[in-house]
Length: 118
Image (cartoon, rainbow, N blue to C red):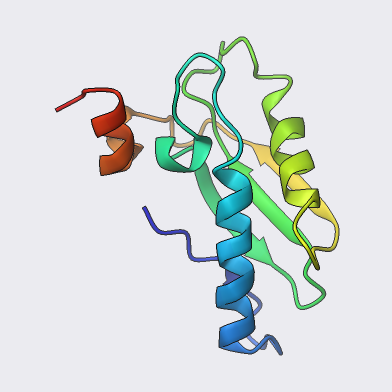
């Protein structure tokens, strides 16, 4: 799985700075786990899109494994809190979407191995 944060087309962020910031974002995503599945949300493929503004504000589109997930009300806040701990980050907005619906095909090879899904 490889997140490609999207900067504005006329972004003033140097590519190296965006790449380093992306690694920090990924580490934050990997610190959040679905309480029912022993795999982090990044490897589960729950992060659909990450937009990074020049001022380092971040907007995230994410989903859950199911719309009726017991942590549906809490998960976006957990992700926001994890991202707010990233050095240099601006404002964080986490949007929950179910379009497209999540499927196990979204999971990384690492997650599939962890869950014995091969």
